[in-house]
Length: 293
Image (cartoon, rainbow, N blue to C red; front, side, top):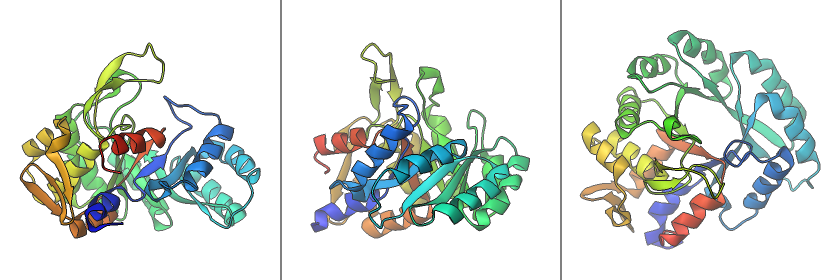
């Protein structure tokens, strides 16, 4: 890895949690497990995060994983569940620790009470509370901050145009997380590095919608935590110009705003962690087409 490659590698390391079970890919457990195993052994495995699976499908996951030869590497899992799943998660880890370990839990939370109920899980796992952002989420982000080390999660899209929030809502969420020092992850609609109009599903006749780019999102988040204003973050989220984002041996820049490689590394560890995507190939291929990989 050259010095010029370090900033982009630092930004992307372990960034993509693989959610192949979910739409629009909606793969079978058999195919999703095998796809993730293939990505783990690929030259791009350094950008791969955890395997995302609903808590209700852990038994099915374990059955499929058992069909693969053991290679000595333990899979990291992120499960979708809630506070009532604590014993199920613990039993799974006790029984399958040699092959796969649940490291994080993602749960919906629409109230401060929901967030409070998740707090005990955060003793043993990374716990992401997915909060709605159609209204100002500041109160919910503050509730998450009151229960460290709880984390936040934002949904950035879906398979319909109506599922996508607007840039102001995303920037408001990011700013609240930055203000309260709350770590977050994102999910849905982030298959591409840059903001643009893309097909909502893999059907050739699919409708198109304006989707967020994961490069836009994570750069905007890191710049916000480094002092960027919320209105400027909206501009960063909406920027469709690939030349607006540049990487050098010193770090990355968006127009006149710069981040050092050390700042990127710190932000990835402590603030902007990962995003869930039902495709790993699509984000990586797009980055390659942009000349970033």
